[in-house]
Image 1 (spheres, rainbow, N blue to C red):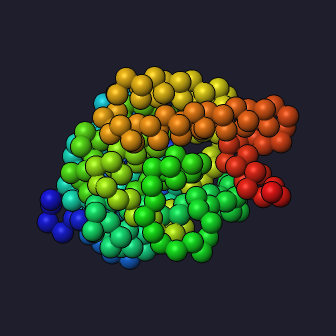
Image 2 (cartoon, rainbow, N blue to C red; image 1 turned 60 degrees about the horizontal axis):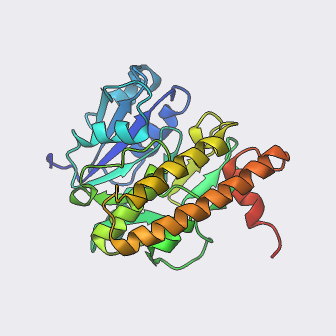
Length: 281
């Protein structure tokens, strides 16, 4: 670990010219300074001109290329992981933001077992809250594999470097879900801080919110289910059982979203989840 660096934050950047500055600003605003920020361009772009000049003077910022073009967030993050020097690692999507206290809070929560995440706050482009990963006000606790599978919001944990192994699974969709199951399997416990310290912005251009998102997700789930059946992700038998059941359920939810989208009831998956969340029982 480099002197003074506890956490490596990795941002995979693809067509992120309009959003990266806000993501970087949220890291610069952390209430502790023992971090490094690695921006990995996955589109061949030099992202330094899209960050305020003052930020470029900070030696904790690193800009690099993934080595590919549109290779996907997992591949880009893994390129950043290869040069990361922190004992802990966290991912930040290029159109999302950290709350100022996120790194400090999660470091404390992850200390016992090596992994912790928080109750993600899902917002639209105006900043209006759509919903949360878990009901606000829920006590902090450990979550199990079934809860990871049932969560319809990406969870980006702070994780001890050794638990990451080779990094994010080689997937273009739902790589975060598979990784979280792997982390629970390896650590034995997945701590959840039930405070919204990660702001997940519903961005129309992202893969999860494109007009063909339901079709892309359905194909991805087929791929993951096939990989699970073949033991591709190194999960224990119990974790594999949970993952198979969970991804089948996710596929059914995604197909319900496709119907809602076709009917004009929800234009994005997160809007669909918010709609279901607010429906009467």
